[in-house]
Length: 379
Image 1 (cartoon, rainbow, N blue to C red):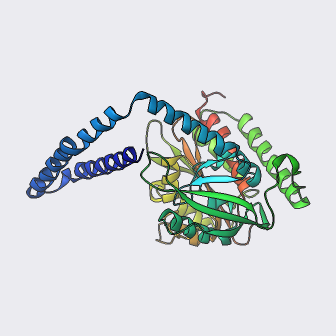
Image 2 (cartoon, rainbow, N blue to C red):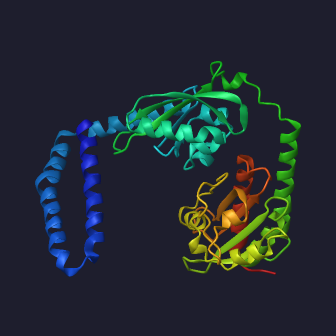
Image 3 (cartoon, rainbow, N blue to C red):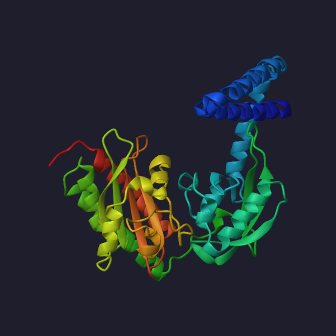
């Protein structure tokens, strides 16, 4: 297995170098001989080393070994999912790759929702920087630390996070295994732990979210579908004020990769700022471009980069001018299918930041919006 891993790393490095050579085709004609020499060198490397190495691995690795490896991998996956300790597998940027059953029960976050999102997004804001730093250090091979963090949904309960490096088979980069447990006791069995009793505030917020979802579905069902701009305009009217201070809607044209801005709703005292946002090209908004390209929701609180949503016509960062304290950038897509648009919501001033529960509700409403946008037109 060690030789197979080394071969995989070498092959991955070769693929990256070939990509660089392809990108170098645009160099001036005087520099092309150097690029050609490098390409010939890479071909010699494949013919002289990689191919004989592959033949050696093929001849020494009978088909039975591959079958046994697959069985072992299936067993390890089953053990990972069934181990009665909350465990998450993340990369060096803390993006979740796997979350076992105990971890979903412990954090209250579905595995399908968590996968592809940073684990730091489920932690209290004060703990995120330290956790990211420790995860990066573990991935570099600098030890297996433990630190106390707090989940965003239960900030009063300290959680002990233990990190250790893990090298998945056949992958060139080191992953990080995160074990979570209460800081003051062992993790009880999920069957014996009663669910937390919601507080009056939590119950009120949940009821408000259900009212919002009901209002959104009513607005979608009571109006025409198949008109993306019209659907988004009705949805923006539902969200504006009661859920977000600003609502910005961008729609993808039919068969076009570029987005066009169709709706901007702002507070009554931000008329001039709304004009600047409406005149902005969505391609100049990094958050919108990333959401349209990757199809995943962004939930930054107190965004560190003032240019994350670009600048208005006067050159001022929009996030600074609108005093944005938290935002939701949600791609509108049905799976499988292309992104049909992007909906961005701002909260500003002293208003409470968007929570994970609100982000999940918005994620659900985005699918309803996508279905209404892509449905056959009717009146």
